[in-house]
Image 1 (cartoon, rainbow, N blue to C red):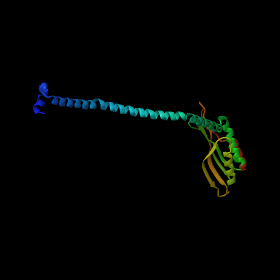
Image 2: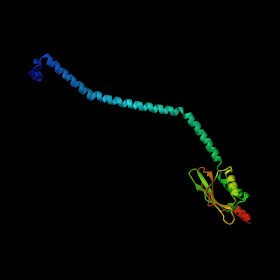
Image 3: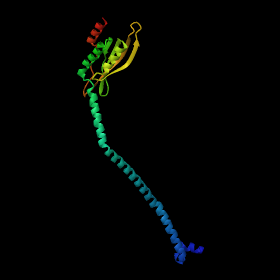
Length: 214
């Protein structure tokens, strides 16, 4: 291979030997292949990798949805069980018309157990998202057994009644216990339901308490 043949390759290709022409053609083909790989094949490989990644994601999503679909009967059964449990709890909440009778039942439980009801004062309703609380402040005096029986009777009512903010102290003079607490009962708020008016102390309970003191 002579250097002047390489110089004459562009000016006078006909004077260049076939070996130089073949070498130049090989170099050109290599350049074309490298450029083609960089400009076309690399981009296609990246696009292929993106498509494969999307395919894998779609497969994962499909498997997840198939798994959820297979568990749908189980979810439906759980939902039905929750609805039944909610219905049972709902039946334990007194209606608006049952609240006065329930308050009277609570006061009678205290009096029948021999407690001295120093205070029995229903408060205004407190409305929550889908139910209303009806607090009742009480101060009762009695023995430990009388108070324990009263609390047991309250928990045994057919309607839900909770005892909150309990303050239990002994009285020095009488030796009895003084219970100060807030009872709460609840009712379900139907659509359009409104809270009650400010509550007044129960007159029957007040008169019964006076009679008990006497």
